[in-house]
Image (cartoon, rainbow, N blue to C red):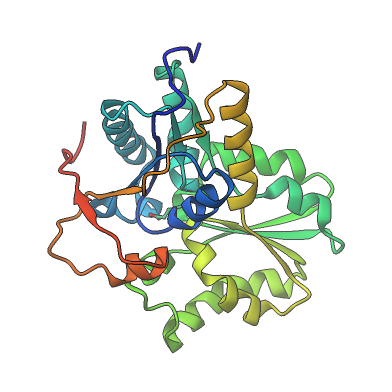
Length: 272
Ligand code: DGL
């Protein structure tokens, strides 16, 4: 099925913005010889307040771009886009390898002592059939508090998430989980990785935060390996692309990545 894919071809990774960089970092360190192409769909950010049809259209446009770059796999480094588009993309492009991320509901359900877990995610993810089904499978024995977090992704993108008002907003989303004694919280949006410290300070050390970067890269590694697609030689630096115009300064993007980067403009159409 995947026999047109080649070891030394790049891997496409995308998110609406900088959230997926948290996953790309782990990807680079665990799979050091792969070549990466990262797309931040910033012109359409946030995905979390869009309909699943709109997000699916964006995922298709970015997939087309990756296909034009001959990628060997596409990593959807975004819970919202995974929920809205991965089934559709897998069906439509059966020759391509797609890996997605979703909130760590199963691991959280296995670890909890209080039998109460929380999920922080975007509005679109919390309303998705994919998450609803996932939660149904695990909510027989435990209570699952699903919390949409409007406004948070925008704060992370602008770097304003350390302000007093940002902290108050984050606290308000965590409050129902604390009141109901959740002891594990799944970070169901890749942007929230950048809030780990702040959230941990609010909820205290006894609450475990689960991020999905490590497991998703383990899965990517596994899929590449069983399809004999792990390159042992490519060592080029990642390529970065954004759909937003390049005149805007991107200090926050570089801060999130950890070093200066060159960003290319991807002038894709508004809809397909
Ligand atoms: N980082 C994305 C996620 O994991 C979505 C953020 C957005 O709303 O654009 O869901």
